[in-house]
Every structure is written in C-alpha cells, then in structure tokens.
Length: 232
Image (tube, rainbow, N blue to C red):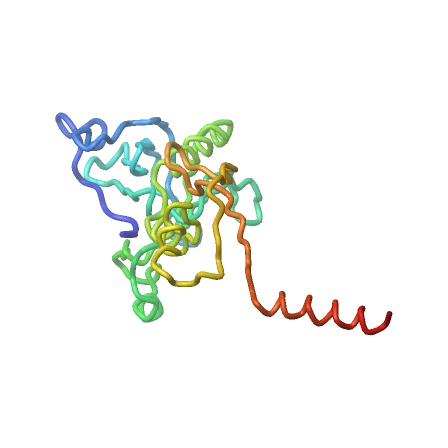
C-alpha cells in the first residue's frame, strides 16, 4: 500500500551518519550520493540545502547535511514514476523527477493546498525532484532507481494479474470435463507445447487443442450430401 512521503529524523550510529536500514528483513543499501538537493512539490518551492541521497532496496532516503534532524523518505512501492529531467523549461536544473502515490483520498487532496500552508503536509506531496550537484550522476541514479523499482512491484497489479489469469493446465481442464460440465469439449492427452513461464513457475503448462463434436455439424453435412445426390 502506498504511504507517500514521510519525515525522517532518526539516523544510525551517533545520529550523524546513514539512515536506519531494516537489514533484518533484507533491506540493503544500494547507493549513496552526496551533494544532492531535494525539491518537494511542483517545483515552485526552493530546493532544500544539499544533503546525501541514500537508495536502498526498499526506499529512497534524503538526509540534510546541515540539519541533522531533517530528512525525507519514500518507499519504492509509493513511487509511481521516475525519470531523468534535463529540460530547463520543466525545471532549471537537471534532476531525477518522481511522482509519488500518497494513499490519500482525492477529496482530501482537493481540500488542501500543500504548498500554501506554513507547514508542509508531506502526505499531500505528489512530486519530488532530486538535484545532484554533478549532473553526470543522473544516468547512474536513474539506473539504480529502475533496478530497485523492479525489486518492489506494485502488489495491486500482481493481484489483478493473478485474478485475471485465464490459463489453466491440461489436468485442470480434464478434471472439469470429467465432472460432466460439457461433454462436447474434448482434450487430447498429449499436449506438450509450453506457451509461457515466469521464473520456475509455469504460467501455461501447454497448448490445448479443442475438438468440438456438435451434432449440428453432422446434420449439415448430411443435408449437403443429400442435395448433391438430388442434382445427379
């Protein structure tokens, strides 16, 4: 579930270092990039003072170098889009542009302007820009974003894929046919053409050839034969 952007105040060690990483549950630090400014919102707010960007296998964390109590984090599962932006008309500095799923209801978003409040409401921030002091690092950062995004697929899409999976194995179809659901559908015993796989799990065990034995087809053939005989 998307949770949006959140404030980070806790750091590992004596509080001057890296963000706290959940190594117990397999979270790993993938990349650390110093000299990165962060811009929250649609780009009209000024950038925060430079900090260090930490990309883990689960989240993106930015920690301020000046204010040790300031930092922001967003889970990859909440990042709906990420891209390299070099268009000065979109934003003056080259950056990584991201869109964030907040999980907030639409009416809540409409009733509050997150950029006009004195206190920034992080739950309503839907855009974030990461501006490295060295623009040459953009491609590297983007590649790492892509890699980590693949490690965190959208669970909603995964559920929909399972729910709408209409591929069945031969055994499943034969068992249904044995129950007398429709005797007109016959399935051959030898069906060995694989049509899909995902890792070690077969998505489609085989191609099934369907044979339709419809009495209507037999009647049509008899009528056609009688007509031919009548013309002779």
